[in-house]
Length: 203
Image 1 (spheres, rainbow, N blue to C red):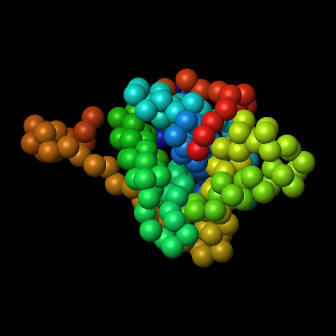
Image 2 (image 1 turned 180 degrees about the vertical axis):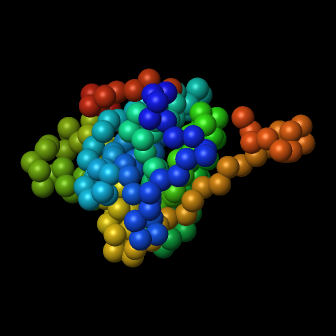
């Protein structure tokens, strides 16, 4: 990690109750993960890349950890898909598990970057609509739709922060195993990518 890495003892500047700095948005799919980031003032979210989901080795999560260090990120926002009635689905559980894995990876790397879950039930629909309005043919959506969905998730979060004057979403807490806690009660428990994606995905 570069020297810009912020360790647990560090603290980010706050603006009216929420942290100021670069934030990263994440759209989790079965095959791919869309990534977006914003400027330090939290005004505009932009696409970064699409990662191939690696459920066995979590190499995609390691890429996100590296992104956090390189960009001096102060927060992650992971989209939490729910049904239109607000009930949880299999995709909801997948997003929660992914966010927990990201929290654990950040903790292991010594990075103090909170991960927050935020409602994204319409992000993919909105992403496809935006691509159609931009004139991109439907058959070409798959290579960029994940990044666009991540932009939507992050833009929603930073817009809400500015509007409400506080942080938004639900912060994911580190889940410690019983074995680790018993062995060391005072210790905190101790990824390939496609830049500008070219492969297909099924979210």
